[in-house]
Length: 102
Image 1 (tube, rainbow, N blue to C red):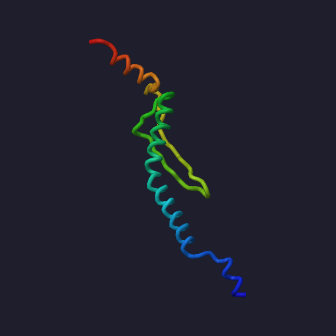
Image 2 (cartoon, rainbow, N blue to C red; image 1 turned 90 degrees about the vertical axis):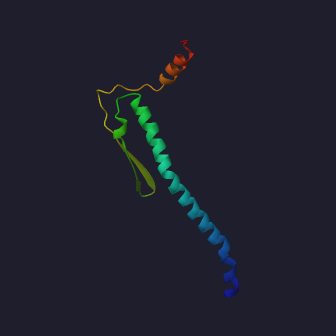
Image 3 (tube, rainbow, N blue to C red; image 1 turned 60 degrees about the horizontal axis):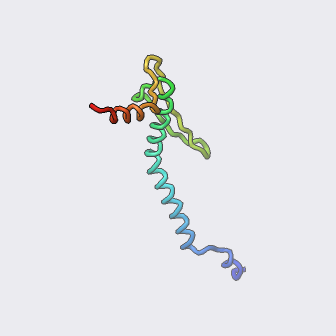
């Protein structure tokens, strides 16, 4: 029986290497998560602010894990007295202001 048992066993070095790779990938992902959430927050707030008034300082972002997926929760106050910012027209205004002779 022992003679056939060694054929099915994996060597310990490849198993350890695979575990280390998984661990390193997990650590890298967790370190970059805060930067990713910050970028996503900025992008989402910019899109929403182009349509409705948003107090940008009052945006709260949470990332939770449920079962096998992550849930991104964003709480923000939409204020009717703040005018929407149209980010598409801002670069054009900056370009025309630079090209105007003084």
